[in-house]
Image (cartoon, rainbow, N blue to C red; front, side, top):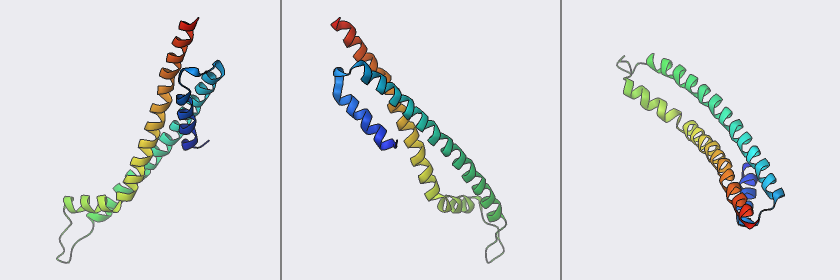
Length: 127
């Protein structure tokens, strides 16, 4: 199930409001579990990609420290940092997007419990 599908299903559950049945509540808990699982998968990917990018940045920094300009002067730390930022800008954006995605998915999964508790309170008050 895709992230978009999970979020859409979650929104459909929200639209039902207090009219959720016991089966709906169980389905919602399964959805929560799926959302948390997907969130953790994306988080793992993020961590691995971040480590790989940090490794590439370190290697590139070492390469740039060996570079001299036309007057045989070494690049300054600021120049090296600027080059690294420019070279890895797109990768940083992709990682930030991935991080935001797994955090959003996890937060939405956690909010499901709040909705379930409200429905359970309503069911108890009707008895």
